[in-house]
Amino acid sequence: MDGTLTANDLSHIVTADKAHVWHHLSQHKPWETSDPNILIEGKGMRVWNQNGKEHLDAVSGAVWTVNVGYGREEIARAVYDQLCKMNYFAGAAGTVPGALFAERLIEKMPGQSRVYYCNSGSEANEKAFKMVRQIAHKRHGGKKHKILYRDRDYHGTTIGCLSAGGQDERNAQYGPFAPGFVRVPHCLEYRRHEQDGAPVENYGEWAANQIEEVILREGPDTVGALCLEPVTAGGGVIVPPEGYWPRVQEICRKYDILLHIDEVVCGVGRTGTWFGYQHYGVEPDMVTMAKGVASGYAAIACLTTTEAVFDMFKTDAADPMDYFRDISTFGGCTAGPAAAMENMRIIEDEDLLGSTTRMGAYMLERLEELKGKHAIIGDVRGKGLFLGAELVTDRDTKDPVEEARVKAVVADCMGQGLIIGATNRSVPGKNNTLCFSPALIATKDDIDQIIDGVDGALTRVFG
Ligand SMILES: Cc1ncc(COP(=O)(O)O)c(C=O)c1O
Image (tube, rainbow, N blue to C red; front, side):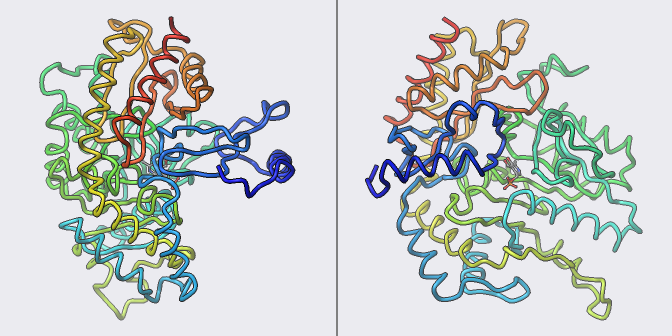
């Protein structure tokens, strides 16, 4: 860590933080007698806190975001140059990086053709929900307005997104929610024993058919869209089972239901393809993305759509209500697309998609080894550098490990200077999955260090 901040500066920063910052997702009571972690500097996969302590970050900024790693000066320079030239204009007009990044992005997404800029994953999902609702009004007399979402999926923090939230602990105490959102069952094969009638064979197809059952129950003429994560993130790192996605696509087409894929976590490389859905040959109508789009170097989120969806919003220029009447003030910031363009160039030049596939396979293999050693690990799963290990007290009953002990593993790793994650205020009684999402630049050595750290933590916590 460089020495630009003196001990006095650092002490002042900690005091100011403790006095005035309301941290995200945090219970502040313990910080009355201890200090929060304040990150001073990052380089590659490592970050340093106010005490100069080095940490290996196995979760890309805690929430699957810093995909190309810390300290990328080329992104900072691209943003600086753009801000000096033209920092902002509301999105009814265009900007140079806005146009150029849209072109580059759409090249990676055959079938998609339009990019709508905004500034967070939640906001992108809200835009998609609004489009579904407007299409229902324009074409179906308001009737086809329901939006289906899946148990265990998360789509954001706003009341609209929580209405589509499949994580009951995250939603608790924030209701009442918006009407017209309907839940479909999850597709976590490891926990199929908790789902009535779930078969051992062809589980993926069965899980998709559960969506059809909900559609038939609600009435297909009332359902406008289905919103799914390609691989569920905070709900337990759920890789969809074989046969799931093709059947989902078939069902959406059969009932004229728009397929909205939430790529906020998987988008732009996390699973080894540009987008998670591209592993499964799916053709979505709408895609939302945020975190990895600019790896956290600037706030940017995008909603992409097919030309067919876009066309529905320009059918009658004489009708003052015909177009998508929506704006995102900060969707007009040019720092986002400028950073995103450089982020994409880095991923291509450094073959980070290929590396993610190779390193992801290696990490999954190493996690399997850990499972062989620690009976407390019931299941390991993942795609690319997006992995999880579910902890259970008994491999036969699959009873989840008590949350306090999962937290103890995370805390032990932190003590070692290794930042890992765990499902958190997500599914009641099921906050028992350790989460790993190292930056796409992770090497075998980095992965070995992560695995060794977790190995030690599991031994200390569970024996
Ligand atoms: C799958 C998914 N969608 C949407 C969001 C919301 O994104 P944001 O926090 O940028 O609003 C998240 C955030 O974790 C997410 O994991």
